[in-house]
Amino acid sequence: MKRAALLVLLLAVIGIGYFAVTKLGGSAGAGVVKTSEQASKTAENPTVSNLSFTDIDEKVVKVDPNKKTILHFMISTGCPSCAVMAGNLTKFADNPNIDLVSIAMDPVNDTKETIQEFRENTQAKWPFTIDKDQSLIQKFNVTSIDTVMIIYQNKLIFSGVYPSISELENELK
Image 1 (cartoon, rainbow, N blue to C red):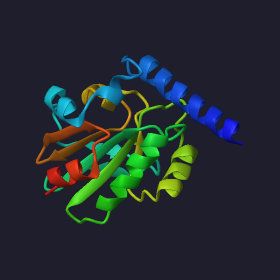
Image 2 (image 1 turned 90 degrees about the horizontal axis):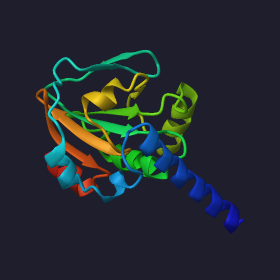
Image 3 (image 1 turned 135 degrees about the vertical axis):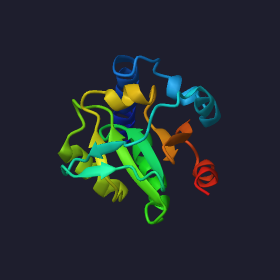
C-alpha cells in the first residue's frame, strides 16, 4: 500500500514538472525555488482594469476595483500543492472585502468536472475559470503553478508562488 501511494505521489510530481516545462516554458523546479518576495519583484504590472472572467458555470465574474481580488493560478488534476493552497485560501473566502478567483491552467486536463471535484475536496466556494487559450498566463506572466496574485484598485499589488497565509494576511490588511 505504501508503495502504491509513493508511486502515485511520484507520478504527480513528474506530471507537474512536465506541465511546468511544456506548458509554462520554465524549468520544473522554477516554482519551487522562487520565493514570493522574488516573484513580487519580478512580476510585470499588467493592465488589470475591466478584468472579467467566465467561470465554469458560464457566469461572468467581474473584478471589483474596490475589493482586493485574489487570483490563484492552479491545476485541478494531480497537484497536491494546489489543493493545499486552495484550502489555505478558504480562510479569506468569507471576507466581504475580498474576492477570490481560481484559474485552471491546463485546459487539456482541467475540465468542469475535474474542477467541480477539486472544489468539493477543497471546500472552495468561489468562481473557477479555465484559461483555455493561455491568455491569462501570458497576461500575468505566470511561470509556476500556485502563483497567487492580488489585485486592488486596478493594480497588481502582490504576486507570489505558494505564499504563506501570513504573507497573504499582510497584503490583505
